[in-house]
Image 1 (cartoon, rainbow, N blue to C red):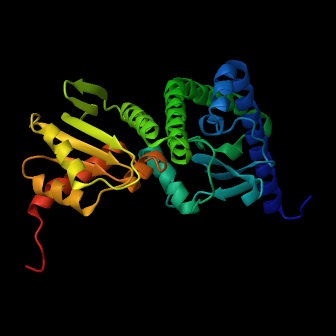
Image 2 (image 1 turned 30 degrees about the vertical axis):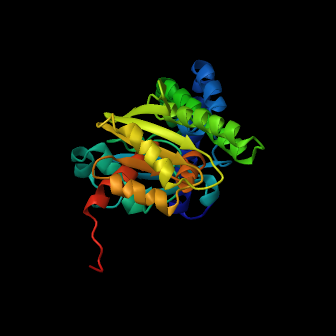
Image 3 (image 1 turned 180 degrees about the horizontal axis):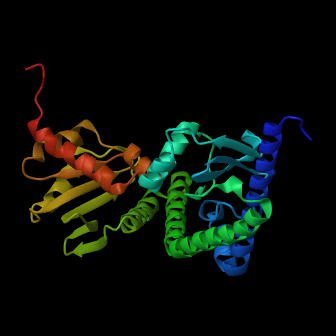
Length: 336
């Protein structure tokens, strides 16, 4: 027991806050367990429970602390990392954040003002508790113990309903990451395989079409009498004719002329050539001379690695390369 009345009052306030926060956390968890058990299980499987149900299983003084700001006209409680402060940290609202401010300012504005005044940089786990027009410390501990159960249950239902609503999107995202992981692994396996050159080329062509499908480009394998093409695709209204190659040596000018000939009957089609072994000077010269009549976007080894290993967006990379191809028409040699 302290001899200082102010210290004693502060200790009593801290106990009241701690009782409120402990009951709030306990009932939050009980609400999730009772009404959202299946949601919680699936969130755990998707490794998304901590973000969607931020206060589930948390305990005051063990892994969670609270920062409290209060006055006779307002009250705020922030759940934060316990290791970074004492279990309960109390502050009083400064004079400029007065009753008129509480009445007139919007909720988000008030939260921003309080955080700025606190210089609150500790990680917050959940939405703050706010009781506008409430003098928290004028009520006794038993009253707030009862209120905490109501408030904690309400927060549990709020977060549980939100989590249930976003589960379809979380499932879709998890499925997409799984598919991307599979594409990455197939590419790695292809890079280290002992396949014959022809077999590796066939597998790479299939892998590339699967990558196009993953990005929504709707690829098709096209066979025309006397002509074999690896794929066509659609992107942002553009029709694309493409070929993939995984040779031991770079593509030559002759290979590029063969590809350009396939675009002769397709004046509205953009070519996409994908070469794991790159292009020699002759190939680049052929492509540049043709740019006024035929447009070809080329991907090399670094581009392919970025797409499969670093998960660069295919559309972004294609658009960047397409712009480079068009901009070449207007390039000027600075030495001239």
